[in-house]
Amino acid sequence: MSIIKTEQLTKVYGKGATAVTALNGLNIEIQPGEFVAVMGPSGCGKSTLLHLVGGLDKPSNGRVLLDGQDIFRLNDDELTQLRRRQIGLVFQFFNLIPVLEAAENVALPLILDGVKQNDARQKAEAWLARIGLSDRLTHRPDQLSGGQQQRVAIARALVAEPSLILADEPTGNLDSRSADDIALLLRQISEEWNRTVLMVTHDPRIAAHANRIIFLKDGTVVDETRLSSNGHQEEMMVRQKLEVAR
Amino acid sequence: MSVRNAILGLLAYRPRHGYELHDAFEAMVGGVENWDLKPAQVYTTLTRLEKKGLVIEDRVQQDGGPEKHIYTVTQAGLAELQKWFSEPVLSDRRRDEFFLKLMLCLAAPDANPRKLIYVQRASLYRELHAITAQRSRVDPKSELAYILLLDQAVMHLEADLRWLDMVESRLDEISRQPIPEPAERPRGRPPKSDES
Image 1 (cartoon, rainbow over the protein chains, first blue to last red):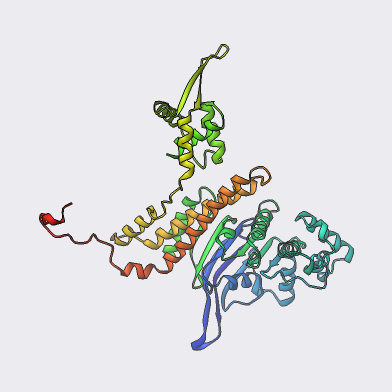
Image 2: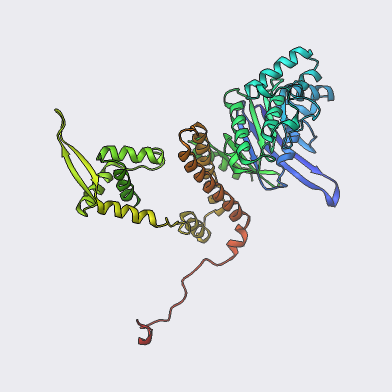
């Protein structure tokens, strides 16, 4: 079963003459363990897609299925729980709590979910070690480089062992070297740790780390690229489908 | 031309036989996937270089085995190499097969130029994916030059991708413009004064 499936997903901001359609009947499917990049010109709906899949915003029409479950039929508590346990979020500006140390930032989602302080701390430290930051446990965000802050944010996204990581321009605020490191880490998260990663980016170099790129324009999928060596054959079939759908 | 000069350069480093030259070349360019040099080309090039007096061949008897042909660069060969070092490498960027394809696709009755762009873009992304994977496996402490070669490839691919986005966004404008045709030439024999 697909881990993410959207059906006729539509999001319209505003009403009447000033209404803006961000997503227009979007259908995508993502399999467990895939690393998928979403690209497209600004305003194509890529961030909106990520927000809807993460349950951060509600669609005007259509459905988002995570593991076959329609997330907008859940009540608020259930949706919050799903976000905490099954989805890890990574943002462009890291969104770490400035007064907390790295390990405290990483442990936070577990503590909010009722995990005991000591257990949460232990898991946080283990994830920080796994991503190469075991010597930065007690540093506050302002004592870390941009790349390190984003690694902490990724550890925080992973700490509750979610099956899905959603990353919105995760390298948008980094120099190119740190950006490459973060892209490699996201690749590792999917390849070695078998998590699904859905990433929005405008940077071709970062998108090229994914297994598949979905191109959006005006709120719909206009093309997709499979980056494996036999990707060309697979794509021909996908393109045919897209053409038939149009 | 570059293979010929590379062979001179490798021989200036030290004398070698044909097969060693082939392997040394391959190691230098980062493997057969980057530059597939056929052994036969090495041997024909060596024959030509020897005829021109740029290398000399020594036949060395091996214990039990067939004799080895060891090549050494001559003074003239070293001078040729210096000449190569003193000249810039010219780029070939305006001679572009994709551009040709795009123009002809715009002119063709039943073609889809947007699809052409997508197919090309997908191929560039696959290349970029393969190179970034390759780059992450290379050790910067011992193979920095090779990393820089891969970085150059990455940067060119990024530029090509940006350019394709630009072409896509202006495709409608391009397709409204006429396909370039040769300037009309006057018929018949040109007047004598125009001949040089």
